Length: 330
Image (tube, rainbow, N blue to C red; front, side, top):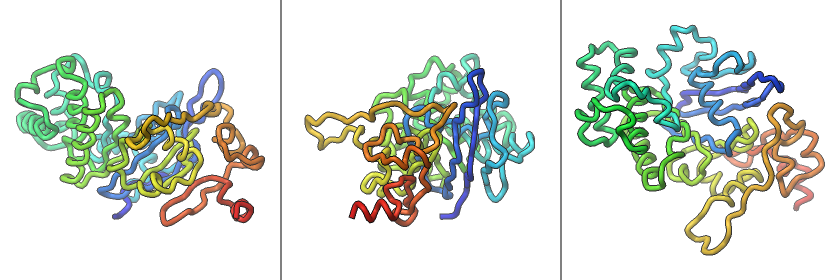
C-alpha cells in the first residue's frame, strides 16, 4: 500500500486562562491508501484533536497548531492550504463522521438537503442530480425507503439511523479519507456492530482510507490494519492489529487490554487502569504514564523514552526496551 496521509510532529495547544493546554504533543504516523488506521486511547488523550487537525477544524484562537507541525496529503502540507484549498479538501478529499450525529446535523433542515448540499458544493451536478445522488447514498448505507426519508428531519431518525445519515453525508462525494471519530459511542452493541460492518463494506467498495478514532479496543480488532495507541497527547505504541492485541509492548497498551471484557474471562473481574492522566498544562518531563505504571523505574520520571523498534512496523516508547534494561531483565 502507498502512503496517502502522513502526520509529522503534530503539536496542538489551546490557550486558556489557566495556561497553555498541550493537547497533542509531537504525534507522527502514516495512513496507507485503502487501509484502516485505528487511533485508540482513553478520553482526553488527543485523538479527536488530531482528527480535527487533519480536517482543518482547529479554531484559532484559542487553538494553535505549532509551526513545526506537518500534515502531508498527496505530497503537500495541508497546513499551508489557502482557504480555497481547504474548501476543496474538506468533503471531497477528506471527510469526518462525528460521534454525536444529532449535534452535527442541522435540526432545521431536511436530511436530503443536508446531504445534497455536499454534492452541490464539491461536484458539477445540478440540484436534481445532487438530490438523486444523496438518495442513492442513503440507500447504500442501509436506510429503508430513502426517497421518503430524504424529506424527514434528524429528530425523526433513531440514533443508529442518524449515524448512517452521517456516514452517507461523509461518503457522498467519494473522499479518499474518511475520519470516523467515535462513530459508535452512543449506540448499543448490536448497532455498533452494524455500523462497523457498514464502514468495512463501503471501504472495500470504494477503496477509502479510514481513520477510526475510538477509546474502545474491542471494536477495532477485526477492522484495523494498523493501530496507534495515544496517551497524554503522545503516541506510545504503534503496530499492526496482531502486534497490539497479541504482543503489546507498552505498559499502557497492556493495561487497556486488561480492561477489555472477553468471552473467555468467566467470572474474572476486569482490571481498571488506576490513577488519572497527567495535567496537560504542566505535562511531566518524563514518561507521561510514569505515575500509573506498574513497571516504572526512576529514569521514567525524568526522561521521556524514545520509540524502540519491537518488530517490523511495531514500536513502543518505553524505557523497558533500552539495551541496559533488557540485559538486566535477562
